[in-house]
Length: 240
Image (cartoon, rainbow, N blue to C red; front, side, top):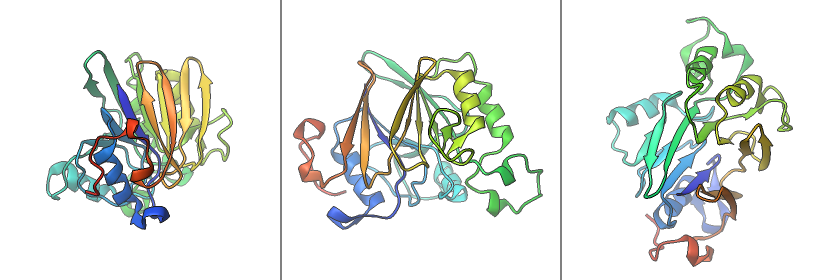
């Protein structure tokens, strides 16, 4: 299975003078892939020509995401992956199981009591109970785990903001085949206990294609659609 993996989507893409969310929509339309995943901070929400699955980050707005999930906003093919849920995607010859943790880490809110802070302040951050929800997946076979933040102690820097002890606990307990992390805004690949962990650069710089059949992750420099190799695209290259 060939899966597109995308980091933070914020701002504009200079080469095409598009909002990055619209450039992302173009890529979703033309890339010849089986699945599209995104690791949070999508920031703007629109319909896509093919299904996109994602978790939210600290710059997203969960109340709007809830409206999209409930169908009260007219947006199609944008599917939020709830914390600790498992998405099973069946390909022609293999099955991929995906889960994730929504939100970024903020120490002020992590163990906050209900009502201690206004709900709008805590939007976009996870709490200890969210981590416990994910820990309940121990023993499940998870191929891809998505986080908006990186595991601590593996050289991702800026602990505990970008590199979070709670995410390291999830890595060590769940043993996903891959963990893909947004928020850090740079690419780094680490292998740990048979897991491959990658922090992702933002879409304005690059995106990634994972071939699960041969465990190959390809880094693709973001460029105007007409400059992408034909081997990556369908024949249609118009902007949605």
